[in-house]
Length: 530
Ligand code: HEM
Image 1 (cartoon, rainbow, N blue to C red):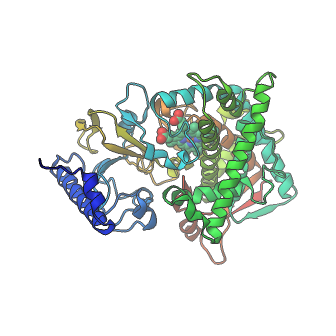
Image 2: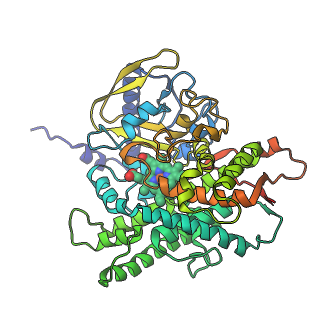
Image 3: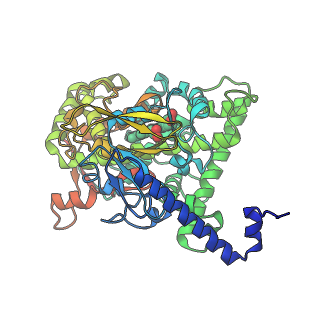
């Protein structure tokens, strides 16, 4: 009788070196076969052949250039990628599978909406950075996502938005006092992000989590590092946190020590706050309606359809803490940088602020809908620097995409899509697509004047049922902050010695991608208005 060896027993008999060489050989052959099949399949879109995919380890380590596309490629090549077609296919030659990238809103609407009838879902690798802390609403899909959304949805109410407005007003006034700017005629701010990040973090801590903190006394831990610093460190180093094993961070270098401290601080903070809120929730007192209480209450529920596990509770706290401040903060910074370069637009917007609220009172929540030019500055900054720069999706079944033909040809092509196809909605490409925006590289807030505040014509918060749940939260916070700041101060670029405005623009207003897309550090001068 012949004895058959299983692949495992064959591997067991080999020494380690031969086993590794065999495995490598098998993976190379399989990759070549895959590549061959991909190339034989009909190409509906222009193809690009980089060595690796942009979001693998090589993509993280190497910069984007003419032959290599790293993880920032969609920002770096935003003006080149989609010149022939709004959708392209990336076929990596050495490592990784092929995937589609689209800059087209109609395609985005078909794949990103997240309805239960959709043939597309959000793959796990699309949200690895956030899942690191626990399962959460941003990373989840299908039934699980519906559960998360159902639990947190009711927190996003008019009461919350009124609170966000009031808190933004108080924060601004506190900031002026605590920074000592009240009596000054002019203030130089070397990095405006230090202000906007602190501002946005205070808002999400106070309004989303009911953690009272002020400009002078923000939420900090006892160990010296502030929450703001910890969140910034985690944001910058999130890719190494995902790709490197945990033990790696015990190497005695300054950076690894900082990452460890930041990580421990955040975990500690989330666990302590959750434990304290659990005591409130189980005490029998009437529950508050804030987001954090809703999450903790769902965690304390008896096992059921709308219960959150401990892992989901911590995952959501991080997701909201992070998505709830970093996106808004970087966009506010970009908005101020852009408005500093466009003085006549600034004057036009300030005129609206004065027409609506005058000079003797703070803006009120009821003014929000009347300050459409202020909101338009924020919208235009989100469009030019879409913080949520990519939305990854995967086909759950064989399906058809209706893809608009290139500009000038008209009509749609029905493109057959195989189950497992990966499609990335390139939010940067979409916001810079000349099909959707005239002169897309230009800062032109007037595109949005008069637009209803929840209109889906503005797409940088995504569209459909899976669109950003924090959109109104962010726009209310931003409108109040910008209205107060611009009424009091003229915003100007803070130039280095001998620097021209256009040199400043080039140095400062390029973008980079950490967890979100952001402009580089922006130096500004505030000059008191008379
Ligand atoms: C300028 C500010 C913001 C931008 C540009 C932005 C952008 C986005 C985008 C594009 C998505 C869709 C992601 C995807 O489907 O893959 C999203 C989802 C989400 N955002 Fe935002 N966001 C902002 C502010 C906020 C704020 C302030 C919060 C919380 C208070 C927040 C919480 C969320 C959550 C929880 C989701 C997931 C929603 C779901 O899947 O049901 N975002 N955001």
